[in-house]
Length: 223
Length: 223
Image 1: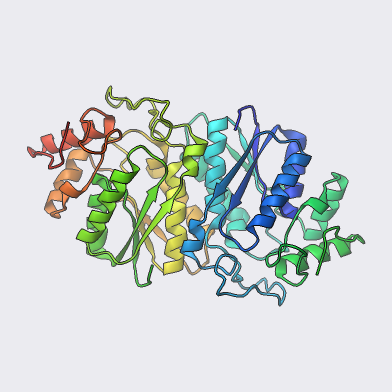
Image 2: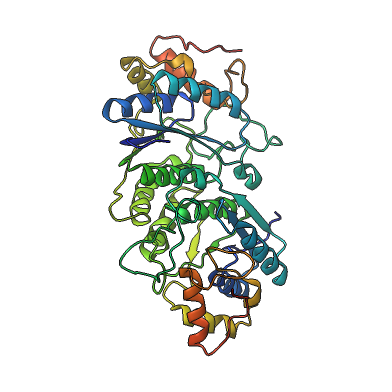
């Protein structure tokens, strides 16, 4: 943790955060933040984070453990008693992979860290359309949180929350990543497995479909 | 963690959260949330929390460790290299005891837990006037966070954030606590020490002054 970063980027290790990191790194000297929270694929996501941070030569990184989210429960991603849905995304309902209010925890850490580093921007790879419909990925939530962040920190801090993928479709995210020559092979999106992506969970289905729509093959291994 | 609670109360173990817990417990069946974050007096605050929860016979409690706040730094409460101020509260400046955006982390946990429990209210003992001037204790922050909480959770969740002490002076908080017969002797407010309160840190000075203004003696031991 050294200073000098202009932006904090939330990097889960998935495809969306990878493309977001590439966009932020063109504009700013960036610091990468990664969260583990007792989710099923935590070790695999951490490996993806480490590889992506090395690829972009990021010296300022922070890993935070929010394992209390497992204690709170309420999600199939942290509660092994619930099964991961594989029936496709139903945009009219919030799926059981929703971790209650997760992005507020992650953004709070980003805000505290940005205030300490003196960074003025926070980048998050939230996607509102063509996604799982989590309320904490919505533009209205992110706008409200940005206001709360500025009221709850020092007057001179002055933060913006940037979500450059918010209104993109998944296929557009793949296309943008390709333009930026991002290392898709280093990212990991599957909710279920850690060796080969399952190919059937909602996250895999959205990802694979996005590559297919671009006439591309996803470079990660599938079962 | 069982269900059935109508309100989640943030209970640090200090005087303000004790009086807030007493107020909330008159209106609701309550669940108590306590946070440790690597602060100097964490063990003593946890002891105060346990005693207060026992006093009010609270079955639903959650303790969360946010020790990553120490890794982020930026505060004398978590960074032993910085000294705790004892020169009195200067309301024109934010003191070095400010932990960047701390209340957002704590409120995010409360929101996630309330959503999982089905509780509709969150009580926080924030005090805006006659306090240390932390931006994340301001009414404008709490109002913005309440909006973010409702936009970032399920539509049916519907949460309110209650801060019944927000506009009270410290002396009024002692008076209200006395009316409610709260066990002041179980609470702990000192920033520095764990056996006897130091009596000189900002938190001790505000607390002692409030008892004196009521013609009362604070029942906790002072050095």
